Length: 149
Image 1 (cartoon, rainbow, N blue to C red):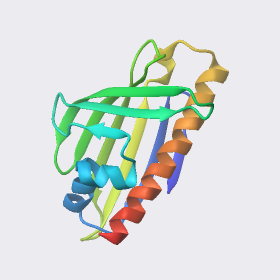
Image 2: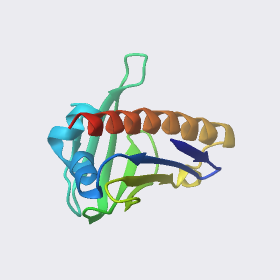
Image 3: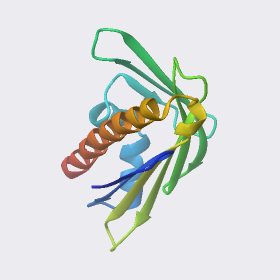
């Protein structure tokens, strides 16, 4: 997996051993999301649909991340807002699938909009690093799931 983080974005790219249509199904299908992301996540996979992730910050404090699907173009492009409950504004997650050699898919995830949160540079860098680590885990789990189905 390739990771590139900047002052206002994080980008992760990986190649999956499956065609884009199968990756899209695993990326957006509720039964697949429960496996690779967790049963604490719901995604209404359609334009205008909602995203909700309920999680624990490690100290026992319950947290909620919510978003709205802005772009839904199967099997190639998904864009959604991403906002933790304590953030003033939403960031944006864009996932693009591109067929590489036949039967393989290049997935690119860009998470942008960190500067709009109005936090210090140190806090922003920490948020980007934490989300980069989290997305890396989820995308590795997606890759492992794709190898099993």
